[in-house]
Image 1 (cartoon, helix red, strand yellow):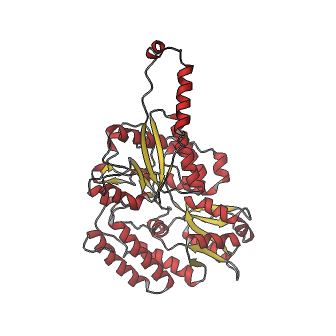
Image 2 (cartoon, rainbow, N blue to C red):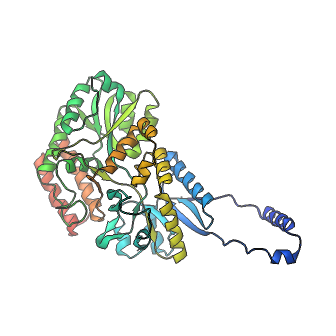
Length: 435
C-alpha cells in the first residue's frame, strides 16, 4: 500500500492555542493587525510518486525532499512511496494522477495516450538543462521523435564489475582489466577449486554493453530509434561466444544479483557484474571483510568500452494547473543542480546526471568509492547510451535475455539462438506480435 511522507499535523486544540498565541504577540489591536503586511501566499503542494522505499536510497530521497521543502517557501513536495511505474496508468485512467511521478523507461502507453506533459517548455529555458551540462546519455534517455522529452532521468545506473581486491593481489593482478581478453586471462588466474572467477547476470542491461563494445547496436543502424533489431551479426556472435567460452571453462556462472553478492562476500567468487547502484549493496554484503574494487565493463573489438544507462525518470502527468506543473519543474530543476546531484550520488551510488554534478563530487570521495568513480567514467564516455524508449524494446530485451542464457549454457547453439533472437526481435519492434 502506498504511504505518504508528511509532517505530523498539529491537533486542532494545539492549532487554536498557537493561533491565539500569535494573536497575542501581535501589536495588540485590531487596527494594527489590519495594517500589517498580507500573509504570505500558501505554498503549492505537489505529490511525488516514487518507489525508493527504505535503505540508503530511500533515506537519501527523503533527506533531499526535506532539504527542498526547507529552502523553498513557494512549493511543498510530499513523497508518496508506491509502485509508480505500474500504478500511474490506472491513476491516469481514473483521472487522479499525481503532479509528479518517477517511472521506469517504458512510458510509451502514456505518451501515446496523451497523458503526459512534455518537459520541453521548461528545460529549454533552464540553465541547469543546457545540453552542454547534461550527460548525452541522460539527455537522450527519455527523448522521443520530434525532440520531445516526456521523461527526465532521476537516477542513473551503468554497468560495471566489482571484485575482491585481496584475491586480485594474491593472483598477482595489479590493475583492473581494460579489455575482454584481459578479463578472461584474469579469470583464469583467479580460478581455484573453491573460487569461481566471475558471476554474471543474464540480463539485457549486462549483455548490451559488451555487444556495443564489439560494434553492435541496440536497433538496426541506431542506438535510439528504429523498427528492427540487428543481433544476428558478428558483434553479437562474438559476444555470445566469448561468454560461452568462459562458461564452458568453468570460469563464469549465471545467477541473481543477491546470490552473486553473497558469493563475492563469502570468498567463493572473485568478480561479479552489477550496476553503479549496486555498489553500496556489495559493500553491505562484504561488511568490511575485504576491499571491493570496481571497473567499467572492458573494451571490445572497437577499441573502446561501451555502456547503457537505465533508471527511473520524472514524468509530468496531465490534469493539473499550470502553477502545479511549474512547481513540479522547480523541484526537478533543483534535483539536477550540482549540490543535489553530488549528495544523491555519494549516498546512493547512482551516477551523476550532469557534468557539474560529477565535478561537485570531491576527488577524495571518489578515491574511496571506486564504484562511483567507475560510474562517473562511464557517464563521461561518448559510448554510453540511453536505452531505446520504444515500449516494444522491453519485449526485445526479454528475448535477448533468453537467447543469451540459452547460447551461453549450451541449451541452444549460438547461431541458432541469434537467428531466433533476430526473428523475434524484429517481430516485436514492427508491432506484428507481442509478448
